[in-house]
Image (cartoon, rainbow, N blue to C red; front, side, top):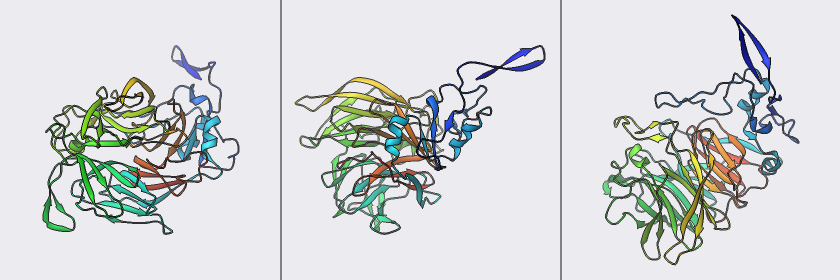
Length: 424
């Protein structure tokens, strides 16, 4: 690293201990792979001056990312701008990469379809069903993986469901966290008006029939359930943030952003977490002992213009953590203790969230995916052009990772020791 030593009007570069170039190198075994790069020592020391873009007046720049950081004195750093896989922990990251990892864009997103959410892989169909939670879009879409290349078509349920934001597969059914509360026309018959409240819904993906499981908290509308996870006994844990209001599919919230546990067996719904600014993604470790909940409280709803969507500005000092909790047994339903933040997202915040069969944590964060250890260590990043809202393991071996977000839908294939769980 170097600094500037000012002597009168002259500036002399003085070498300092700590910086050891190059910061970025080819990964062992991938010397001929232009899309794979290894960051040495987590880039703990960069040659100063370096500069990364930052949020100004609540508006984040597109290049507020680690890989877009300007490091003029280290030409090796520029390798990251072309990399699809950025490895920070070689001991575990190279094991995940496998023999021939690649990222390919499968579908372009129409200009109006900026957000893709709630992707769920259905093994019985070998397809991924996902949502477009936008004003005026009243059906979901399905990616058919049985054809080469995959095909994309509309997916309409009975009754139709508006603005699904989170989804998980469990024992042959899809469970949805649904945001919208405004009436909407039936996409199959515009003369029919569908009434819906935010809540938890269950879809039979074969018959396409939808059942409402929960649509209120003791008579009060939920805000806009964002994501969910079903544990081994069938209890549904879900986050309830304010993003339905942000995209104008529900009224201004009247409940604080909370995380709940819902027991379909009894109908009881109980609060389990209330300290996060905007609880978002949620998952459980493979052994069922640890809960993970992400916070995207950097989205600031205070004084945001009501006529500009989404209805929030960005507060760079707001929440952007992945938090771990111990899951404790109770006859009334398990509960959470020992909250600890284990990861502070280096880009954006972790939105859609999944836990792999091996215990790795994957979060859709900005222009890519954070791949973390079970303890919150950043192992690698998967980078794409655009913003990733959500992701889903797919395929008969759950060894593909499909990414959904601004700009399109991507498939990550050829990975090594990382797979999705069967019910997830």
